[in-house]
Image (cartoon, one colour):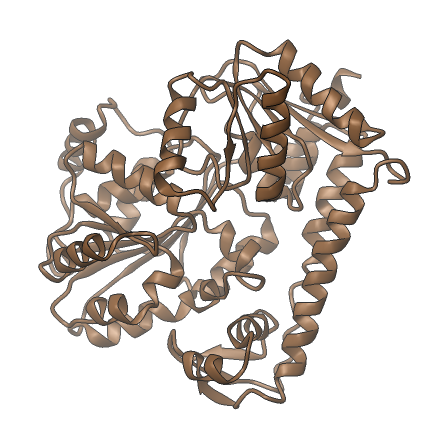
Length: 481
């Protein structure tokens, strides 16, 4: 539909009502749909449960070409594609865990232009078999959607370097298409502070984007931070909370796969029916856990951040962070999975006492991640001398270990430009300073120790100073004191 007429608003609404069954859009869903149909770039920040996926799925289904949805997690892709297929809609996904026959089938559907939505990870998008087909001159591409765009900021220069190459995707694809083709580029996320917004806009090379921002405040969601003096005390507080809320649905968040497995096993020994959930599980195992939780067969899951993205369960009454997240954006994403039905919900975070003397786990975890990041940045800077000033990422990667990560970090430091998604040029004299990753980590520490209203802190952190002014929510632990 790059040359076709934009459908009438009457048709847009009728299709929306027919597929999803809602009477009308919630603000600003309608405006976002119009923006994407007009092939305009956009940055969309809407709280978890705000109906983001409809905003890009509907325009994709109303057009004749293909919309690419770049998504961080296999579980998230599978959930969205399964929902679309249940509605008899033309969507597919490609990821590394698919069988050879499934992958071939999807690639054939892509070649025949039978798909409206194709979900894939940044790494899969840039893989030769997929890129070759997407670059075919006859394949019509309407839009490129980055779902959960905060992952670009959290992971792009640490362990998912392909994220940093996404800004070069649209110009490279347009070179293969007929003149006059337009591809809308939109980034969707539930949380992005002003620094993250800048990184997303610059990395993706968004052009005069429409920006839609809804603040994350929820008057039914009650944040609470509790200091725990010993590792045993942390477990006991968790048990006490679960006993108190044993008949309601919840989530227990931990930071690693190992933590998820160990804690779920310990809770099972204590007589609780639960499951460990993380990205390392097979797709069918993840699907079974999700189904059991959604149906109430399991009341709570012990999970990493891999759980919850794209899963909609309105009646989640509580979320516990057994360990605090490293970033405030992760925290807001995860607590936002509670209370989507508008009823009261609890968000409890357990943290070590300030000195970390009796319970050093949190301090050690924080130190580990910060040291790892410093090591990566130092290694990247040292690798500049070994990297060719102009090169191709795969060829360089075969000769130099960790080259992809180094290139990603150099890009975030303003010392490298992507000519296209596969070829780079190093800019040694660039004056741009690296975005200091310590800033968002300090923010999380400040939030956990603040004596002020927690919602006021969160609104300020995410750039909603006007809404935060003089706010005292009355339902966080600090306001209740």
